[in-house]
Amino acid sequence: MAAFSSNEEDRGQWDYELLHDGAVSGFRDEEHLSLVVSHLRDLGYGIAETRGCHHTELLQHLLSQVSMHYCGWSVKNLDALRYIDFSAVTGWALVIRDFDLTYHADQHWAREVADIVAEVSYEHLLRGNRLLALLHCEGHELKLGRLGGHEPWWRGTHRRAASVGP
Image (cartoon, rainbow, N blue to C red; front, side):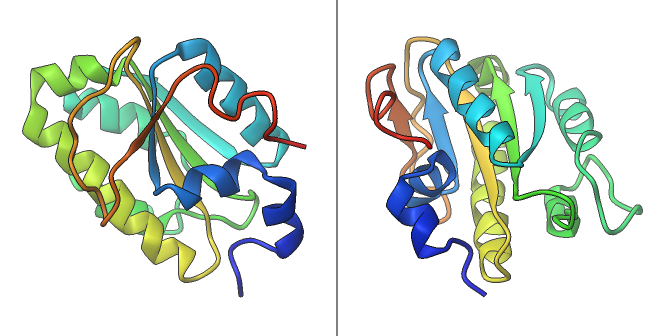
């Protein structure tokens, strides 16, 4: 089963555009991020959203909003992302606003989270499921390096904003 139909690709939906560039996308403008989140909701995505903070609290808050197949998961282990339930949604978007706060508190941990999300997203895509991570850092980009084989694309307020979406 393909993760996207040719109609979805031709319409230039936000989810297709984001996943095309890699599972993890960065946003320098919170208003632009909010617009994309709104479009994803309209497409039927489940949205799990938090603000950057201490990493244990961040994971606990984020993962508590996601439906899981397996209830034995732990917020200390991101393998829980492998058990996301996609049955009632088009896909899941994990949104972390002010990600720079988490990054500056522990750069290694923040990068590892982004890398694991990218890796698990590809595993879900193999089964036709869509998992995105949307990271917000107001006004700047973080050097996360390659994640799941892709470099994150940092979007400004003008890239594809007017032309993408149904």
